[in-house]
Length: 514
Image 1 (cartoon, rainbow, N blue to C red):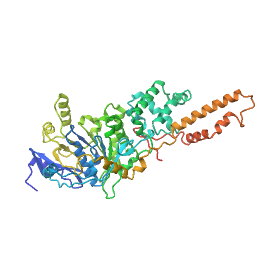
Image 2 (cartoon, rainbow, N blue to C red):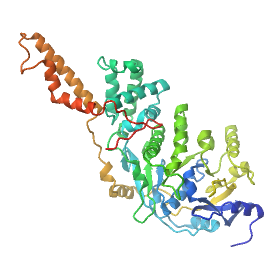
Image 3 (tube, rainbow, N blue to C red):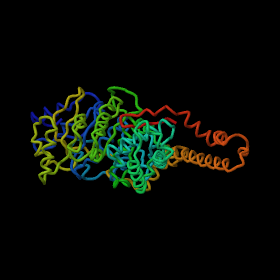
Image 4 (cartoon, rainbow, N blue to C red):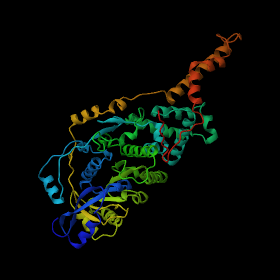
C-alpha cells in the first residue's frame, strides 16, 4: 500500500471494498490525483440489477463497455454486445501494448496483459458479416412489429387482430409475405366475414399496413424475418475453457435503420425473458446484455410500449439476466426504467448550450448525495474517466466516485475483415443458421385455398353448363373439391391448431418450439 488516503477519499474507497468476486473498474480520482490504492469495483452478483452507461460521444463509453465485458467473460458470465459502429470485434483479439496503455495501467494499479476473449459474431438477417439472426413474424409479435413499421395505436390494434386470427386458424406467419397474404385475405370478399364478430379490419387500415410492409421490404428489411429463427439461448453458452462467450451483434451495416435494430434488440431481450426459468438472486448473472444507442428504443414509443419495456426490464432480473443501457444522457431513458438501473457509469457531458446545461443538471439529480461538485466533475473529466456509483453486496448504493478507468486488455478497435469472416464460418452455429429456409406457412396455405376456390367455381360452372347428368368422375362437385388432396392438406393444417391461440408475452412476442 502507498501513502494514507485523504479522509474523504478513504471513506469513498471503503464503500467499494467488497468481500466477494467483483469487476475492477479503475482507481479513484480525488483532488486532481489518481489514487491507485483506492480501487473502484462492481460486485459480480449485482450485475443482474441492471445499469446505465452514459456520456457524450468520444468520452470512452465503448472502451468501458469492452472493459466490463472482458471481466464478465473472464469470470464465466456470457455477454451480449450490440456493435453499432463496427469497432467492438476487437474483443476477440489480444490488445496492443503501447505507451498510453502502460501509463494508464500504472495510474490505476492495473497488471495489464494482452488477452483476447472467446467470441461469436452475428448479423441481423445476415446483412453484414456474421451468423444470421432472424425472427419469424409470429414470434416477433404485433407490438414490436408496429414499432418497426411506425404504425399508430389504432393500426397497432388492427395488427394485433390480424395476429389473433392467424394464431387461431393455424396460419403461420414466418416472413413478410405470410403477413401480407393474411392482410390481403382479410380484406377480400371471402375473408371480410372472418373478422366481423370481433371488430373487423377496415380497408383503410389494411391499406396502411400493406403500404408499410411494402416500404419496409423495399428497404431490404425482409431478410430479418424468416427461418431458421434464432434461438436466443445460444447467447448463454460458455467457451470450453469455462469463460463466458461474448456474443457480438454486428450492426454497422444497418446503423442507418435505428428503429429496426433497437426494436430487434428488444425482441432478443423479450425472447430471453419468455424462455428462461425463474432463478431469483444468483451468485453471478446468466447473461449481461448491453443495449447500445438505447434512446432509439424509447423515441416515439407509445405509453403501452414503454410500460412493456419497463415490465420486461423489471422482471428479467429474476431470470438471472442483467441489462446495461448505453446512451448519451440519463434523460434518454424514461424515469420508470432509469429507477431500475442500480449501477451507473457516467462519462463526461458537454455543456455548451442551454439544453446541454439542462441535461447536465438533470443528470446530477439522478445521483446520490456526493462529496464532489458533480456539475464541475462531469464537465471536466477526461476520456476514459467516469463518475461511478454501483450497488453494494447488500444492495445499497455505493458512494459516488470519480474514477480513472482501466484499459481493456483486448484489441481496442475492429479485427481485420478476413479474420472476422473466418471466425464466423468456423463457428459451430454457422451451418445451423446461415441458410434461410421457406417452409409452408400462411402464404402457401392461403394460395392453396384460393386455388381450391377457383377450382370449385370452375367445376360448378361446368356442372351448370352440362346436360344435368352430373359431373364426370362421379360424386357432386362439392364432394370432388372436399376430397381433393390440396383441400385435405389445408383442412388438416388448420384443424390441428384451430382454437389453440399462441400464448403471447407482454410484448405480444411468442416462440413456437419446433
